[in-house]
Length: 364
Image (cartoon, rainbow, N blue to C red):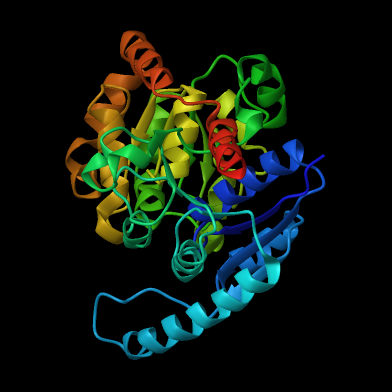
């Protein structure tokens, strides 16, 4: 059995970290004797999440450029030089067979050095509108795995492979989990269930919306599984006393939450969008307008333009949320159409397809 060495780099957000871990897990399943090293940014969440997943990680002193003039921007050139020097030391010491980048600032210097030294590199872009790091790296990368069509606008066409984003395996077979989900969440099987997702930290505007619409939801006689996020636990946990409303800081069994849901309200981060395509439930996307290059709106548009989800911008929530939600909850036809269309966009074998591409680099 071949003994390979892989470096994976990506982080800053879960949307970059979890795909990297999923790719590492699939590589480990195929090549059990291989060695793995992750490289992240020193003060970001990957420094905790990667060791929790059972992998070693080294940190670089790197961060992005701020949009306004700050001291961090003055430090950026110094951080970049230090990170390039450390990346050179890491690549020289570890001697990887392939280096994989999943986005985030730490992957920039590392993949730049790997490509310079002739190590095969692959980047995985989760969004429909790429970040600056992957745009810069694409010139020297051997392969670019993407989740959306039309990215030849940003990347060399001959390097592109449409793979989709890695999704957790436990969401692939939800039909058989409905009863288990209803018992787990203590739900009334005769009522419709709304699942509200704002990410692990929470989404302030979505939480405000749900709070303001609780009386409206009560008139519709629906039950709500509301994931408010870690930052907002104290603000909203009191609503657990409301009948048909349960508030969770974090959902440990996302598969059961999806299985229980009739309709989902969600942000539009790349991983969430890919996962919801696989889940196949009717979705209302409320994208965050506060992310770089407004990529959540672009992700949501890529789905809603195919009549596979509804998109409501934050600015339009007060004027149109109730009308759109009422139309959806009362129309089995619309729910079914959205479900059928979003399932067509699902790329369930994304992780395996990405690792297939990594395998082709090993043979070169």
